[in-house]
Amino acid sequence: MRHHLSRAVVVGWIMAVATGSSAHALAPTYRVIKDQSTLSFVGVQQGEQFTGVIKDFVATVRYAASDLAGSLLDVVIHLRSLDTRSSERDQALATADWFAISQFPDATFRTVAIRQTVNGPVGDADLTIKGRTKRIAFPFVWAQTVHGATLDARVRLNRLDFGLGSGEWVDATVVGHQVDVIVHLTLIATPSVPATVAQPLRR
Amino acid sequence: MQRLRSSVDRWGVGARWLHWGMLLLYGASISLGFYMVDLPLGFAKYRAYTLHKSLGISLLVLIGVRSLWRLIDAAPISVVSSRWQRVAARIVRVAFYIVMWVMPLSGWLYNSAAGFPLQWFGYIHLPALVESNPHIKILAKDVHVGAVYVLMCLLCVHVAAAGKRHWIDRDGTWQRMAPFL
Image 1 (cartoon, chains in turn purple, cyan):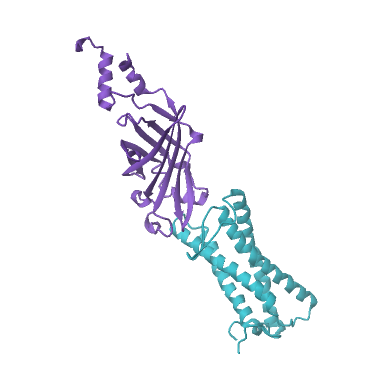
Image 2 (image 1 turned 45 degrees about the horizontal axis):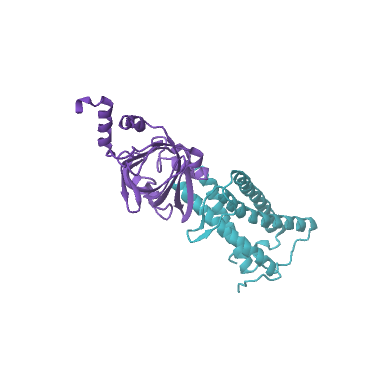
């Protein structure tokens, strides 16, 4: 009878219904192992590829294939840590024509939904660079490991969607429009807030 | 009748074109070099560097051709009677050749170590000589910039000597190398 149920169980039900995972465990939270994770991109300058690395980013990762509604990828990317192995190029990328880093020091990536496809999970995410937000599809490969998981993804962006390379820099023979972003995260499972909220369900 | 090869008393068309053509290209490239370094970061600076690099690659090819041509083509017989002046002229000439090799090669090395692509007017792509490397970059830059000043010093000596021979000795030196005579 309903009035005999403890308050905690009701809260647990509400959480479970809200996240659509009544029959499964809620998506656990993961912590990024920094020295085993990379966020990089491949651009083309004068027809020659160059690779950039963004060393400083903060990622919030919650994922379970059984709890897509409760899953989330949220990354704040500190662009000052951008390194293309060319100090001149890095300085140019910081200017207003490119990332305008003093005005927009961070880029953000946040999934609004994660869906399962025949090819694996795909995040629909809002990517904001230089104050411009674009909804992108973010297919990724999730592999469970002993203590956590790895996430690998490669997405192709058009730099012009974010106003990167304005004025004469629009010329694709100078800098290609397509930029491939490559993500490799090594993740370790952590005790998480959803897990503790889910506790009442197990009583 | 203009002759490609040099004769006993006159430089041929090949040597003269290389001499004056490289002077023009070096003038353009060095002027651009001094101008571009102080430009603010932006597209104009990028374009200036790209053009400077294309001119530099041209000069590298030309010094290759010129060195070969110098080996193939016999130089006119020297009319300088002073032994020390002949020796001095030879030292300056050898130094010119060395600097004209060092200049574009150090620029290429500098560009490679700085991690930039290298193209000849957008048509031909040249590989990097080394991986991106901050230490080599500084060294190559110092050599590249140092070579400019050495080249300008050599040019002063060369022009002074040629002027002396033309106006004081009046030994027909201008006629031997003049571009359109």
